[in-house]
Image 1 (cartoon, rainbow, N blue to C red):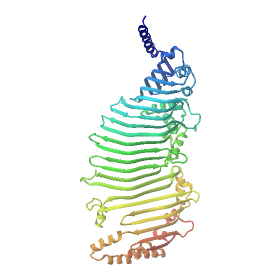
Image 2: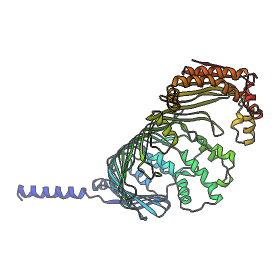
Image 3: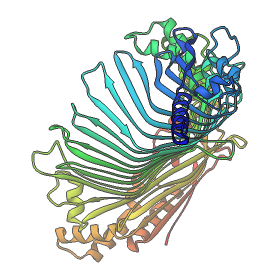
Image 4: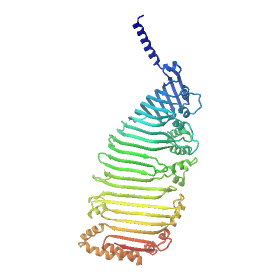
Length: 619
């Protein structure tokens, strides 16, 4: 036998051996764990022939035809490949042992691998008659240790819905996740909460998803998100486990009418689930939507939506930025919309404490206990230009607002004790041909727009039993301003009682302790005098002197001839003669204050004025 012949035979044997060793024989088949509602099934576990031949702990293996079922959600993958495995074969087999009573959480924590690859996976969710199928392409999990995945990469995803008339397709691009804790997830679905305040565990650290697009071909709607991301998702088990809670919520959602018994089960379960997770931060950027439907054609854009979860040192915050909407006839822009310091804690705790009550059993006091805390709502840079639908002509409604603020905080029995309502630079145009009588009158005075700002701010102080009217103001550019400050005393906590009789009695007992009113003219009075003088064919200065001289007599006829009325009349006369600022201070003669009953029992305004000390000055 020549050397060349022997070399050829050896080479052939080497190639044949290599091909044989690359074959993956199945070492386990048809594995299944759990029941129908929570089940893991694997068609086969395969390892390279080299590992099988030498009975080694396989450094790599693959799973075929994997199916995981959790209630009405099912995960399916034809193949899952593991490489750089640090777990023993026994620990891998324990994952799929049908006889093991050990929680899946503990079994997952013993699995370690350098990389897990899933070429294609599907998640099917059944929601009533609708089935949502989501397909994930080329998923790679890196550095799996003790049930945790350091990083996850998904090249793309697509979701379709079936079972309904609508045809909705959702697609997404590159997806990344970090610090995913599979063992903790398994515990959420398997375990029941040990108590009402179990600690939150981190489920994943951060995620991002690019180029999300939804198309509804039936409605002609396209919706896109350039980027979706978030971080710090925390969760804890619910009373009946996440699997049990979601099964109950799905069951109740499919019923047309809920009995009182159903409601009594549903309300605490909803509260328990809402309280079982916490999101540190979420953000969506580059949001656009377009409708091509005949009756609703238009486009909308949102530059950014962000949510920051509340902690002990940081208030919750939800904001929308860069909103735009337009169609053939209408246009609207909004710089930002935000809500800060809101909380559903009171609502969640109230639902948990219903103790078997249904919606029909909730009385007024219970309903008050479920009111959430609004915090502070802010709107900035609003610009509206829309067609007035009620108008037979092409009249348009135009409005711009610089800022709007609504604060409702520090609730007592559902009623906020710190409130503020404010608007800055709300502008509407004044058109002489308007159908509104007031706008036509302002146009006659020479105004081309109305620029209004106002604020109402009040806070209840429990220690002093007082409500401070910090600001009640109205200002119109180039017209004038009006402001009021004051204090209301003897306001007990009973004012916020859920019992209406108790609250009414507390209101009657409240007493005004001080008030100051300031009126400032910034052009309105002189414009009015000029218009009236022209109509009466006289000079504005002459008409001004007449009005100033008549003011004391007019006020005396309305308020009587008391010293307070004379003081007020003299100040008003000086204000008309030389428009500027008029300040009126009112103090009750009774040191305890001026009560609601005092106002109710007074026969006319003159009698009320006798109970006050009034000072007034014009500047």
